[in-house]
Length: 126
Image (cartoon, rainbow, N blue to C red):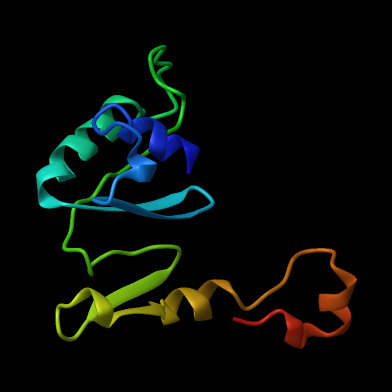
């Protein structure tokens, strides 16, 4: 969260107080919601303050590798294996749904050492 606010701060003073910027963050995944007027400026700031590859050191960035920055409609984003949709196109109709393929293909096995899950596997389910 601090990284994205750092990037956005170059375009919008104190973005965490801005009514036109909202973010979803989980781990290293981030979604930024902003007005159309700010969208391109925010995108450029993120691209300028981060790198696309870990192969070449760049001195003027924080070191975060952001492979893609996508700009979509407010309801069309993929976040932490969640799919989104809106039937009416209104923000209060936003639906988040687990990506069923990813759930079935990647969440079937537990490789950790948590004894509670090993003894009672039903606790490790999506």
